[in-house]
Image 1 (cartoon, rainbow, N blue to C red):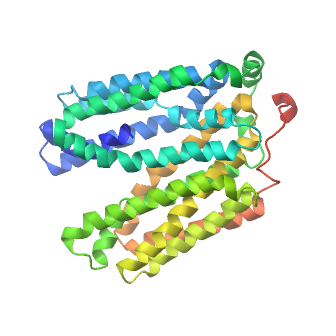
Image 2 (cartoon, helix red, strand yellow):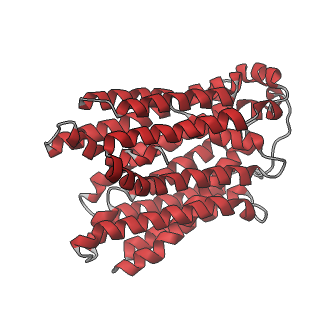
Length: 389
């Protein structure tokens, strides 16, 4: 939530820094918003590998300390390039997101891994949904510069919670043996785990489709006849509905996994999300969007958690940091590529974006159905990595 308290208002902040030309504002905003996920995608596997060797807690604390300092520093900048430079550094030291999912998987009791992952992902989805709402109010009260201090305080609270309440000693009773085993595992070894690459593809595809709505949804809402004064409100409402039901989907995944395997849920989610996208393609009026959005959001929610659960089930605990780092890379690549490609496609036809999403999701369902192996909901035995490989 701390991150989205301020980042949606970055273009306004550049105005305050003296950038008045719309093109220049767009350029600095795009560069500053894009550089962090790009660096995070590049370095997440490295931070995950280090977490496997030295402990996840210290790596999360490292990341949170850097965010406290960088967010506070953003409130003191005087030039646009200062913001870009800080965002670059922020990307270098990021990585707490993937590690928090790995920590949830580590902390879960037997049979509760999907519930733990789903709960963390629910929080990850609700935070960005609530952040802009609170951020707009805070900016109106104290100004944008001081809002960065509030964001830094949010990261400070997270740091205190992790430092005092997360006990890694209980989870890693054999930390030294785990670290020695992790050191012998290469990136290629992790990629070779059953269904891992397939689940990375699922995460990439879900993120690509989810992010494709950002650049085109307000335009589509206007194209369906919504008055100009209400486009922002209606678009925001649809985004909020998608985020809310997505969080519900994360939470419900554990219940669904009692009846179906993770791979079966991924297939079902892909088909269900394709149906939601098809509703957008065929929509003649706004009510269609309000019917299709919950279908799409719910499917993306439980499908994403099922994919992470399937991946976690085949990755030995001593290399989960590396594994989830690679999954985060797939996630962020989808996040980076989608707005660019879909924005270009929308210049020809907005409905073509949703048609591409639906087609891709159907293809994904077929790929998982035919290529998926075994029951990826069972937690692997804690045998040494060499035996697993």
